[in-house]
Structure formats: structure tokens, C-alpha cells
Image (cartoon, rainbow, N blue to C red; front, side):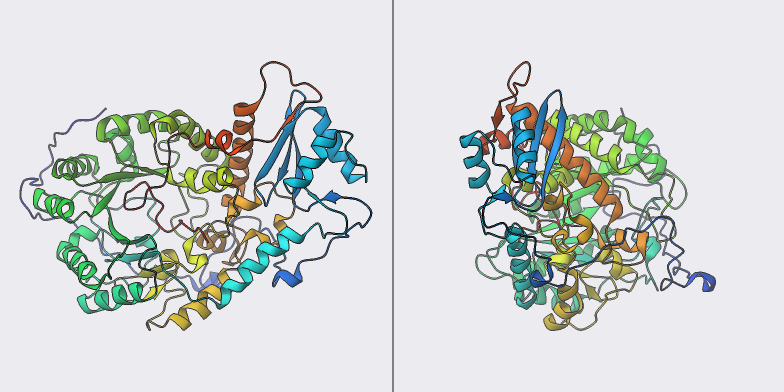
Length: 553
């Protein structure tokens, strides 16, 4: 589906080469459309939601003293053909069954206990039902109380993302970094600032906790000496027992043999952006002269592999490759044997491109992604976004945040030396700080963004996916509503679809053959739940690990 040869005019053999660079123009804000702090008029309907201040603000449900009752956040889901699922959306607990389960649920709503004593006992012991006199919202309130306490905790970083440069040698049409840069500069982050930020990162993190220094841009290999400097700083500043590794995010077009050798020798893991074979990749990932970049990317990946560097691939799923996604991923695995694969949901490149024509629907994305996961899970393929949603479902834990920026674990620094919790806001000069002050970081971000969790949003009441959501991305929420504290509409939609797919897949793992008997019911055990994951696992110090979304808090 592509060759390793290249007929372009650029010399691929030397350690350096001349490239056509594009320093982005400053983003322009129209004076007539500044009602949203420089953002354009809203293109979509906004989901409004009340946000509970804290655990005490959660409304109390009526607690019956004479009988058990369903906890809050419980749904009855019709699976068809006489099968039902009672789903606890906060405990990530499911019970499957025939008509007996539906009747038990409806009976409890009406104040009647199930006729089956064993089913009644299981509903109580697994937390579907609150005993007499116990508040049905008690578990919900306990999760909120846990999160409320974290506002007083010092942030503990697990990710330092270094946006080393505002410059890139490619001009990908869906890029959401370069086009948003305010006051771009040609120079990379300075040596002194890198040292200060890396030292700050280590000072406010736990030595034994897995953490990543992610070097990206722009295209960081334009300034490879700075990459070398970062590697040296990491070695000099890390503490005994430091569980930290470096990941380089690159388009690989400038990787030559000496670069590949250095990265391999220093165990720098490389994530390379590639959207498919040449005919797909080159549709949207071109250089500033309008020429496709695939051949140079392919050559760079092969140099990295030949040198022994660990390589993962990152593709953006959009209209240009959606219909070929399974074939592309199979080809990736056979052609490059990557450690992991990021298949990213394409986001609007800039705030005024919420209707960008390459975007895909949330349901189509979830269906395609989970189909890919099922096809390749027994081969251990790590699909970061699927894993991010599936792991809490399988492990039955509440996911407080979808992004480490909301959890107080992400630190970003840009080419100008400004720091902040979120790369997308930072390049737009929003939530940007110059001073390395942990109290300022906490007060500016953690105290507010920690409330970007579905347990605080009244809109999320009754949602079956509440525990695996995390409320997506603050940048996307801002684009679609003008408020970073709003619901991330597209993440909400695809997460709900993922949740339905997970519940249906789990049912297929445990259902009896043939017709579902009216009195059959079953609660999946841990081994049955694990079947959904297959051979996939998150492995620290490899690229089978989430960058910026590993929020086990």
C-alpha cells in the first residue's frame, strides 16, 4: 500500500537538511464577533446544566425507613429479545437478566421487593438497592466528598508537555495547535526556562508515580539540540527511583540516522503522526508547498525502528480515512509493528471552524473505534481512547476526569516559556502563567476545573455512562458553548455510545445460548469483564500508556 522509495528533491541521507518552514501568522480576532472573548458566534446548541457546589449541595432523595429502594443513578436498559440490564452508572455494576429483572426493577420503583430472595440479596449486596433508612444518593455524595477534599491537596504532576516550538515544517489542515498560536515566535523554549520547568515538575510530583515528559510542538525535531538538552536535564534533575520517561511527538520527516540512534540510546519513545498509507495520509498532511508528507514520514519511522527506538503511531480519524480505518490499522500493525496506536477523534482546528468539513459524527467514531478494538484486542493493540473509557468500565471504578488538566496532574510549557494546565488553552494565551508558583496553579485551575466531573452536573443525572465519562475536554466545551466549564457535547455523545457498546459486548460474553429464559439473571464477575479488554493493558515506561489522560485519582 506504499513504498519506501522517495522521488522528492530533498536529501534524505545527511544529518541535516533544508526545509520549508511556516511560522504561523498571529490569530486574528474580528472586532464584530468579540462577544465571547474573541471567539466566533456559537454554531451549535448549548447544553445548559446546573453545577453542584459540593457534596452538601447535592439534593437529598427521600429515604424510606420501611423498605429498601433503588439507589440513585440506576437505569433499566432494554437489550432486546427479552433481555434486560440494570445498570449502576456510578458503581459501574451491571446485572443482566430476563423478565424477572425488569419486574424486579419496576417493583422496587413501586415499593415492592422481588419475589426471588437470591436476586433481592444480590441487588442489596452489589449496591443497586439502599437498605431501609439509608439515603439512596449516599454513594453519589461520597464520590463528591472525595473530590471536594482534593481542592486542598497540592497538585502532583504526572505529565510535563513541552510545546518546544511554534514552528512546523508541515501544514496539516486539521492542526489545532499552530493556527491558534497568539504572537508566534521562531525561537524554541530557552535552555534556562526548560531547566526551571523540569525542576518544578519534579519538585511537585512523586518519584515513584509513573510520569512522562512529552516533547512536542510544532515540530520539535526542528530544534534537535533542544531535544538533546531536555534528555540531559531529565538525567541530571531526576531523583533516585524516579519513574519517568520521555516521549517525543514528531512527524518524523526530519529524522535521520544520527537522530534515531540518539533517541534509541536514550530510551526516548517516539509517537509518529501518520493517517494511513500515502494516498490517505497525503490528503490532509502536506507541507507548506502543498506536497504530501507520507514518504518522508515513512522513511523516518523506518530509521527509528532500525535504530531500535520504540515507536507508536498516532492517526486522526476523520472523513478522509473513516471508511478505511480497519484496513489502515491492520496495515500499520503488519508494516511497522507499533507498540501502541492513538486513533484520535478529530476536533475543530480553530474556534471558528466548529463545522470543519472533515469532522465525523460521535456515534460513527465510537462504533468504528470499538469495532477496531474487538478485532485487535487479542493481539494486545493499545488504542488509547478506547482504553481510557473501557478500563474504568471493566475495573468498576469512577473516572473523575477525562483529562489530567482537570485533575491537576498536567503541566504544559510553550515556546515563550509560559506554563499552564492545558496545551490548547496555552497556545491561545488562555490560562497561561509566567510564574512557577504551585499555589497560583492550584487556585487558577484545580479549584475550578476539578468540578468538571459528571458527579457535579445535574445534566448528567440519569446518564448510564456517568462513571466512565470525565466530561471530556474543556477546549471542546469552550468551542461549542463559550464556557470551558460546560458539557463537552461531542465527548458526551461518543461516551454514551461507547457505554452502550460495552454493556452489549459484556452481555454477549455472559449470555446463555439460545432464548433468554424469563427467570434467568446473572452478575458478571471480574474474569468475565476482563474478556472485553482481551490482551490489552497499560504498561508504564512504554507507549502502551495514556499521555495526559492517565487520571487514576
